[in-house]
Length: 297
Ligand code: COA
Ligand code: MG
Image 1 (tube, rainbow, N blue to C red):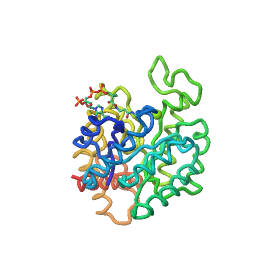
Image 2: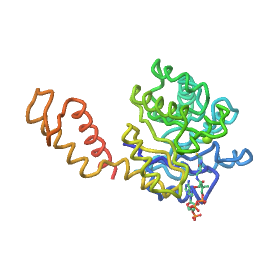
Image 3: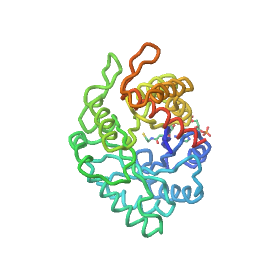
Image 4: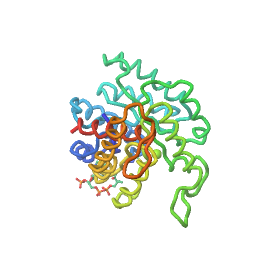
């Protein structure tokens, strides 16, 4: 299954939890971190666990949980509380390096055993760029990281705080400043290098759906698959943007056919344009993605 839209839902909001289940998002991220205040932590854990237990049939919408960072005292109680609900995955914020993902992997081994869950069944998405150190440790993912790590995303807000910045965008163009573009690029290249899904960053202006669509298409062109959402209206826009259109699928089919008609040939032409192996690979990716999305319906 490809997860195109990942909708954050504050873990202590009954109303939003209820709304989330009917939403188009391919996955909900039930949040125990930044959207929950300290005095609501305990209640949020209970609500998230109850919600997971009440929804054991995940069907087309997976249920993930964002826990607190591993260097806080909150993370282990978060995990211990929610694992009885068998979440599809855990979102790990504010990582320093792959070592954090591997520590979480060990915790999950223990908790899956306690709950009688299949070992390794709980996946991990890490938010890979929220600390200053994290930008300098991307190589650690290539040196050995848990198989549970199936997706990686980046963030520019916590990183700005970590870098002592008062803003993370160029005031004239509104584009991200250099460190955030570096974070984005490192997230994309590292995800691809370890065959994890690179997930696009949240588009914070949640009333601007046109801007969201443009941003999604830009992410998709760059190689990202899917995007984090913070508002229910964003999910459908994200799903559409990351679903290959009929035209794209038709064009990809034609490319594959051209090569199939001349087996063993490394270069061909279509509509006056040269095609070689990267084009064929790209066309196959489009068809594989379309087929996977079709199978989810
Ligand atoms: N998940 C589920 N439902 C949500 C939701 C979300 N993330 N955000 C809003 N809704 C619901 C609202 O409760 C409202 O439903 P209601 O009319 O039945 O009460 C409806 O969708 C429309 O919401 P709207 O009034 O447009 O937004 P808002 O002003 O109430 O909320 C936010 C705006 C940003 C506070 C809210 O979208 C939110 O909490 N987002 C998630 C924030 C988060 O998790 N951040 C951490 C990750 S960065
Ligand atoms: Mg945050």
